[in-house]
Length: 160
Image 1 (cartoon, rainbow, N blue to C red):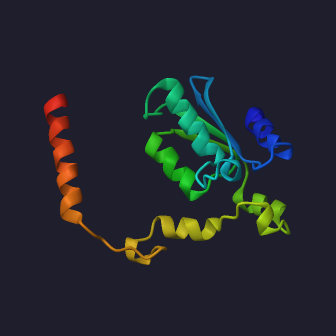
Image 2: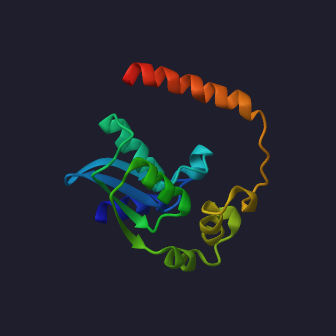
């Protein structure tokens, strides 16, 4: 946790960053680190947790981080929680809560940070498609399903 907080402190002197950082640990060894570079990289998904997961997957040459733990300087948003679940992270440790980070950022102009309405994001993430933003319309389903089916056939032959 000390390393995650130390990484987050880099935002004090690194332009285009925000003070959110994370580590992925496997068997007591750090296998991935990440730091929020959303503004610097023009990437709204470049959260500390996402970057740590990406780094760990590259270092371990896998997309399965089962058996790994994630340490983060702040409670993860819904995007990061989803990525942790997809990657198979087994345990989360966090320092500041979302409420605490929100209170710390109170009064900071929106232009000076990358704002996320974490409560709205949480509510929408699990909602049915018709209740999410932005509005969605399905198009060309048959064409897309054909590609999915063709891909599945190749995997059945290759791994079957």
